[in-house]
Image (cartoon, rainbow, N blue to C red; front, side, top):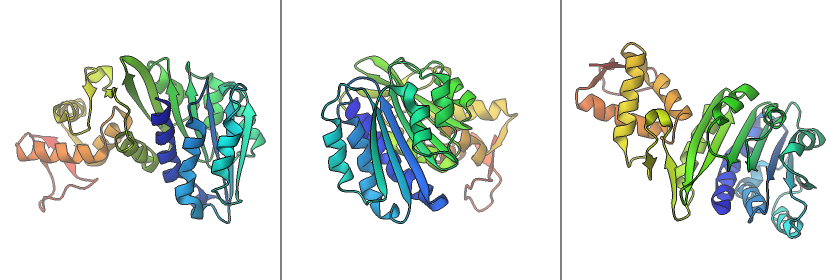
Length: 292
């Protein structure tokens, strides 16, 4: 699980950093975890090496809040830092997730883009989530070993306007994997990364309880679940929604991606189950989908 989380965070950091530094001359990436990290800290940081050229000319702070009993952490972080431009400053602090608000303040993160990566045994305290949401803008990738219940409400209460929560099963044990942001682009990147990052043997995603809670092993593996969800959302809205409305719902609920939605809408249209208002057959964001 540690390797998967590290690769997932690296992929998200790789997508996030260039956009963050186009918005501001400074940005902060902070990560914290409980217990031995198994390489999560340095693996996540390697996401910057692929986009190192975008960091030059800016100010990029990396703060790792880690348990004190990890003697090899400094050497591992140092090896990655040596591959990065001098504009990237890496700092390691002993502690747990509760130190994240202090770490962000010390890094001068206020008023600039922040990306927080938190691995915790339990749902982090409200103050931690609020600090993670205080960036301008702010993204948060959170894994809770306690499972999925309550994560969506906690991130929304903290101030994240777009939240997706997916339950991850490893050997039958459920982990809650949540992403909070204000950017559809960031959330789309997260959904894509869920499927493009190599999975350890036995990892499966599980759909939300309102969709039956069934496992999905590939986004295209159970399109009937998404088909039913599209029809349910159309019915709840009186029979019609735009593609953008449906896309936003898919982004924020479950493991399916926007590209999966477009394929399902096309199939439903071909089957005569739904109609749309485009004479040229092209389905765009403003296309209205109606139950036939």
